[in-house]
Length: 244
Image (cartoon, rainbow, N blue to C red):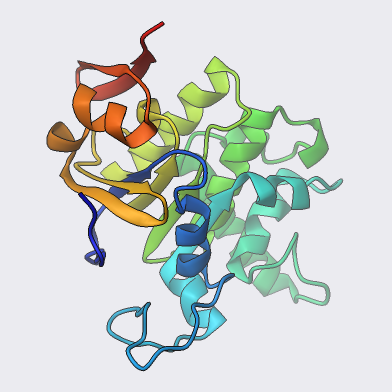
């Protein structure tokens, strides 16, 4: 089956899954407005019912965390200033900020770092962090602008088990604090228990959309990935295993 349209409700947390080439990166690009849809008489993408939206409006609506951003943030700056720069969308604090602006940005940054459990990294040089620590710094940076929702694009790619654990724990804390999350991932393990809706993409279309208990089944996942798999489930967490 496939579905021609997709709607996300404000305040809703969802997971978007699918194989390579399914359209996940395009989905994130359309949300973040790094990709613009082709013009049509009927707008193919709308935000809050509006077909046109500015980058500043996007920044206030959606904070994006991706592995690509981690490469951009690989600089010799204190972690606190990397996070504080998210207030204005800059890499580090903006030059010529006055003392009050700097103090305010750093105060917000400390609150967000505390929220996800990395307050102890504030004075560290960004380049001295592990991949998992740096990923959580980017999460805090996305939070400081207080966007309506966060979009995580493959948040655990390239992480070891410890890094995955802490990133997933950060996602849980964010959702539990009332911040909606749009999670885009290959891995069912990333889908934290607080996320109830799953959208499966395949060949650029919505393959399935519904409650995770209905979508994350052996048959549905085997059809999605064109592979014989089975799904395990324990305490609200799901994993995907292949049949050799």
